[in-house]
Length: 497
Image 1 (cartoon, rainbow, N blue to C red):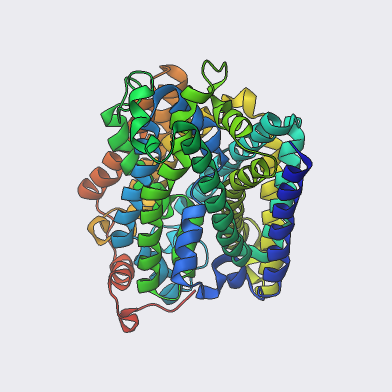
Image 2 (image 1 turned 30 degrees about the vertical axis):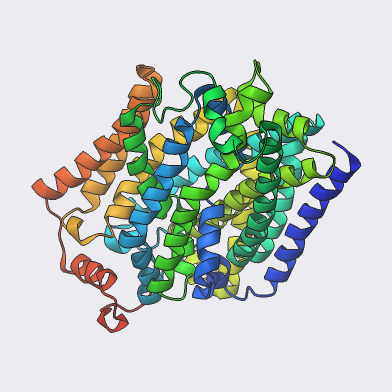
């Protein structure tokens, strides 16, 4: 990398820190820190939701799949999210917002104690938090791989540099810092994506390269499905992403909760869905073209970095690298904020009696400590990512397969159609899905379709089945679900916690 590239990257990091420091002054209470006090504009909530949904894994692991298998990665990796978030705009976005407005909820899992019971809430909190440590660690490792590819920087230093910058602004400014840096990162990523696609089209002979490229690629690269990434895999991914990106991945629920009202939450979800359907195509077009520019790579995950170095002049490489950082830092910061809210408001009060009497200042301080600890732990785990199966294994096999069983009782528990499902159904669904994954992945060494599809289908069957044969319907649950289902705030029967 040229000195101009390092200047661009350092300027990007400095901007993120400045936004974090500015946001610090807006955070007065724990609800400001976790849900922006319910004052986030719908367009900022939508952009933040989008930016918090994918990371540098796109430019490493997914770029590797694009290099070897072609456009299939767009369909199961991103079109599935766009469809899922669009479904969530109808089903979940407004309900998350009403949980905040009508029940005083400031954590994605806070309502589970009322919907089921405290043991169910704690099971989902501990398992989801543990999984997120490994998920975020994979993101740090992906960024480190990019820095190593561009600048020869040792992997551990890549983890330390990006992790430390994120830790500082996220701990200082909470969700306001996350959302505002998400917006700044979106602008930077847009500029970087346009620069990269312009460079590729210039090499392909102009704008006509958008439609002439496909005949020049190796056979099979234009099929939405392949032998490994089948139609069943794609359809199950739509189900997984519908649950994951509408609250199953807790940080994204916070964007709906932070909007001023349920209508704004829906509008933010629609904006995010549209971005997921369109913007990844801009980012991934150079990845699809990579076999023409850097053929026969020994490691396909380095294809995007190799293309950037081959096609862009000094200064522009730094801009594209900053754009890659932007996705990871956006996702990790939002994950850390969500996890800290769960630790502060859901886990710690159960473990430590004194925490139940914390005032707003004490909860805010605890949230910052939890954010710091979570990011630091994920950075330590990231140094061992290669021994855990690599980035793609963690993100696709672990997170996609395990997030489903954790999400089923959380998301479906908000819908009136499942009012008969109680704590037994929730815990059985969670345990059955995780056990199924363990048998398939570690016992039978099953393929990706079975590993991702079977756990969530088992969880759904157990949750719905137990609700039908062993109903746990209560008047309290009926009142909560009715309040979440109605537009008028006057319909809420409960007092905020």
